[in-house]
Each structure stands twice: as structure tokens, then as C-alpha cells.
Length: 461
Image 1: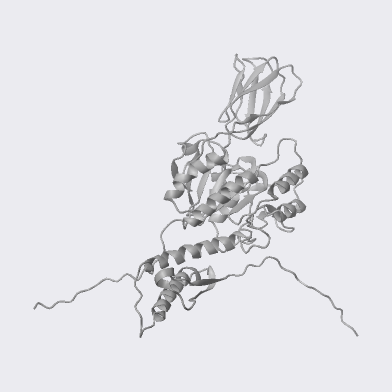
Image 2 (image 1 turned 30 degrees about the vertical axis):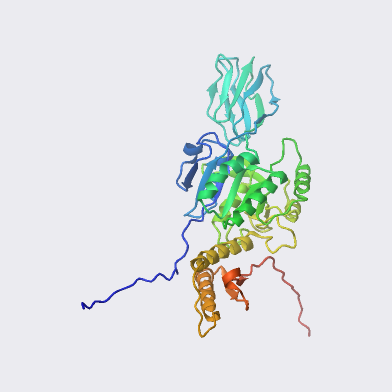
């Protein structure tokens, strides 16, 4: 007999599960194939891939507030909601008139200012699409009077004589997507990618949130726990802050879900090119989520100041409190600090829920993924009794699952949990009913507020 040494490679399944932390981002834009997943990162030219629109604006905000390894699975949805052209507001001394036509593709506050007096083929103008914060170079009004406002889908028609500094303002709302279009766009990607959350870049309301919650429940049953991040609309033209906030508070009543987070806040958002445009805060919030640990609050003051957001005139801490009490994610300022901050990373869960904040939900969902990944190795496996007792073998399985979660969530820096405990109930019929464990997670506490009690004394003789 020939002697030899045989080496058998054992796999203890002790590695970490693979997969990125990229969210699925869905919304409308002027370019790109509808329904096709595009993987983007910090160096991706978003305008080259998707043109313009909510999707591009919010992705820009996401990456401006994300970490160095940030990325996203992005899918363009069909824009099945028509845009709206507002009424032109005039400030002029000339007799010229301006009308607008087209199919609005993006949200824009168009301002056209006459820079040289005259008629057609003589007068000159410059224009802005962000309310006058930045302007184009000067152009001649053509002989046909037609002025195309680039990338917006809007054409202005000029007629008559214009004086210098005549100004014309027009607000347009671009095409958007219904929740049916959004769900249709994400169904196929969610069969391929297991994502931590789905970010919808379009404005939504409570009817949409119900559909998102149903989809989140479906994903959970498929062992892919995820939550939705979305936003409300911003105020309509000439709608006061009080009227808008009252409408937003009214809309959330009657809805609750720990798998839906809704941003309610807006302002002038600065991009990396120095352009400022009014929009909601959801892209910023999405970036903070990707840039934080699962158990870290996106409202952490030392880590997540927001400097690229300029709140609207009149928006104060009282408004922030009302919106936060309504379970929205909103922003605030702190006296003595110059940046803006998220008030709390809220979900729309009931006030009595354990999952009112995102860091709790995200931590539990990560533990769920880990526990399932390790436990799957034991499906259909045999359990051999030790001295007629199967409990020692089950205790071994319990220890291995516990250790696996600890290795990935307790013994990491920074720790995501302080401890994990699995209980093995006695008297189980594992052959017919399966094996049951009770898992207890011990989270890392977060300081929600600080009180300092102070007194003063004076020396006595």
C-alpha cells in the first residue's frame, strides 16, 4: 500500500457576506434608458448618463454628502406625470410681451432679463433657470423671437420692443412619475440586487407611501429587508410656509410604517459647480445615510453638518419641531453653530414602535441578514445525539450563529452592537417543526439630548 498524507480543506463559513452598501435610486430624467440599471459612483458624469431632472439633482446631492466609496444602482422611471407651466410675471417699462410653450422636463425658476434695449434681432438678453442666482451669457433675440431655454423643454416667444432691465419670471414643474411608474421601474432591479434602501427622487404623498410600505413588506418576506426613502413636495408658488406645513402635517395623519422615511424640508441647495437651486433635502439625507454606520444617527452634530443647504426665509426652529413631531425627516439650526443639521433620522413608524429611528431599523436589518446567512448552512443538516441528547449539537449551532454575528457587529470598530444573545428554547420538535432560536440584540446607546444643571454660590465671610 502506498502511504501518503491527504489534506482536506474545511470551510468554517466565517467570512463576511459579500455585497455593497449601494442604495437603489429611482426617478425621472431627460436621458437614459428607462428601466435599465446603471451603476454610478463619485466619478460618474451624471449629466452624460441621465441628462437633467430630479434624478440627476438628487444624485448630485447624494454624492456631495456621501463617503469616498459611495455608489448607487440607478434606474430611470417613465415620467408619466405631465409638467406644469406657470404664469409669466413681468417687471418692465417696455411694451414687449413674452409667452411660453413646451413640455417642462425639469423644475426650474426661469428668469429672463433684457440687457440691451430693442426689438427682434436687436435686443439682447440673459437667462437663469435657478431664480436668478446665476445667469447665462448674453444672447441676441432672433428675428423670429423664439428663445429656447436649454435643458428645460421650455421655449419663450418674444414680440415687440423691450427696454433694458425688463425682467420676465416663470416657474415650471418638470415631468414626474407616478408611484405605479416607480414600482414598475424597480421591480426587476430588486430581483437582482439586495439593497439597504430604495431612494425615490420624485415628490410623494401618503397614497404613495402606502404602496411603498406594501413593497417593503414583500421584500421582507423575500428575505431582503429594505426601507424606502422619499420626500414630500416643496411649497407651490405663492404658498406660505404655514400653509405648506399644515398641508404636510395633515397628509401624514392616518399613515404609519417603520419601512418608509419621508423627508420634509427644502431650501437652496449648492452643487459642486457652485450653482444653487431650490429643491427638497432628500438627496442630502440619502448621502448622509450612505456615509454613516448602520447604528449611527444621521443627526450626529459632530459628524454630519450640512453646509450646502440654505434654508428659506422665515423657516425657524418651530417649523422644524412641528415637522419632526409629524414623523418627518427635516432640518434645523443650532444656536452658536453655522451649519444646518438633520433633526432626527425618523421613520414613519407609530410613536410606540421600537423602530422610530433609522439607526435602529438599519442595525436590526443588518443582523437579520447575517443571522440568515449563517443559519442557512444548517438547513436540512442532520443532528446527531450526544449520549442520546441532541441539545449539545444544537448548542453548537447556536454558538456558531452567535459568534458569526458578533464577529461582524460586536467585534468591529466602531461596534455596531454591544452584545448578541441567542436563546435555545427546550422541548423542540426540530424534525417536524424546525429549529427555533430567540435572538436578543443589545444596541449602542445614542445621546439624544443633554441637560446641564447649573448653580452658583458666593463666598461668605
